[in-house]
Length: 214
Image (cartoon, rainbow, N blue to C red; front, side, top):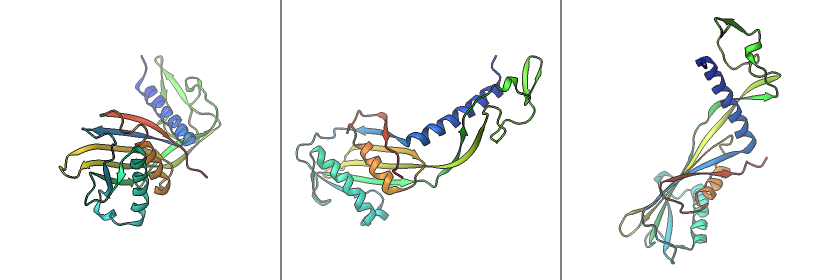
């Protein structure tokens, strides 16, 4: 029978590996989209507005709104004004304050079952101390544990029928990245949102986002 402590150790090791992979490949966006009778592009007009009133009229918001507008125009919709557009595209974006993660640097792996760090009792192993992250981690040889910060970014895109107020589309794109640079994050998340747009209603897909250029 697999011991709980062993499962916990393996789980933690998996987290370390996932952190390494994330750092090596940049980040990926999870895109969720829902639609209800969103009309196919046939010359309908649209206008992009800030879902958060505090962003309305901002230069930065205007820059990102242009990205959304460009994607809508590429699909075949026609830019209009909020006062007379057929479709109102409500757009919002955000990035959190980040959280710490740990990763292992270096290579090597050794079996702790045959390491003096463990002692045996009644056919099972019992650690001499609490298992945890550190420079003497028994699961990794010639390695070091470093901490780093990751940030969760998100954009929200809703499309309403201006005349009826009916919600026609809802979409969210989220990503975890070592960057909190909105000028990098938002354009990539917009790309992810409009990849395969409008998608299958109720489906969440993972779309690769390129790493930030150094």
